[in-house]
Picture (cartoon, rainbow, N blue to C red):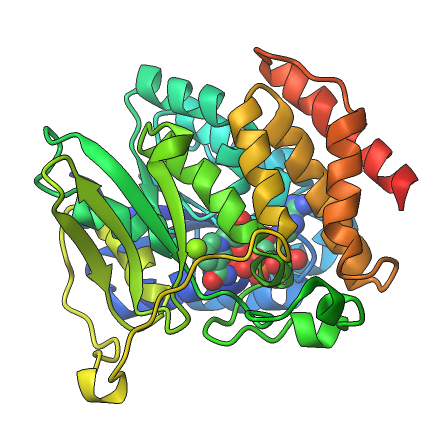
Length: 386
Ligand code: NDP
Ligand code: MG
């Protein structure tokens, strides 16, 4: 296996919510993992602190204006420092990397993930937008490069765990569970006036701002349906969503004999992160254990597609295929950023996405260049529509 038998990890987006939790897993499993590369976009302070602790071979700071500070702090420690977004895509090909954990947010994850797959690195995939934007291309590339993509998203990790030992048994259906977010039970008119602060308060998970808003609109579950379609090679009609407010059952597989397998546990991203990095081994951990007596009832309800129309828009884009999920994703990224800057209302998010999906040019069988072009066009259209 690898040098010292330790898996050498390149962690893209180390300063984010998934990134910092991945580093916690690595510090709890020092015999299994070591950090080879760390990357951040603009949080140079935290990147420096992480590098001092984990002593990677190389770090990349996305924002080139910050490279001076990072070099001054880390070059004396013999840590190589590079700057700029393109450097992230270049660094993932380094020989000494065994696995690339993609914890970048949004479309920015696409290029580095593609380059890592081309270089034959196994992927721990948190960045779901990569599969939303270009799932067909990414899964084809992974298959031809002989690369495994291990899901970190908790629902997809649950499905992956339920499928262990079942590779020859066809899946009839999967159920992705959703907490319902902070606005579960509200109507469209209730949501008219909700603030950024209310939307950023997720009941069960602490995550980055973008995915927290996606959870409040239920767009996150739409993105996850598309992610599941590609990871597990399913048809859209085999993927269902069920609201489960306690977030204990992380998702369910239903097989052709009618049997259902579910994976459950307390909501804690460190478990799926560790499972993806350690696969096929389950490593002993001190994560808090589930206590049945604290959860006397686990409940389920149907999603309200009318109030949370982002979910329907994502489903429409998945059914349409081609570059439509890429259009939908770009419009959503623009809409969420605009909402976070108080430039549009909460209910403006689905409106902006719907308008962009109507206006952008549809391509049935896009190439990588088409996706790049589509993302640009959809961002311009969405920005004009604000
Ligand atoms: P965060 O916003 O917390 O972190 C994003 C990371 O990516 C940061 O390190 C950030 O650097 C870096 N980054 C952001 N934009 C760029 C860019 N343009 N170029 C280079 N680096 C960039 O996000 P999360 O950790 O919450 O989410 C990461 C991914 O994981 C998302 O795709 C999300 O959907 C998915 N995910 C997250 C879960 C969670 O619990 N958080 C659960 C399941 C999936 P800097 O700090 O310097 O800005
Ligand atoms: Mg999830």
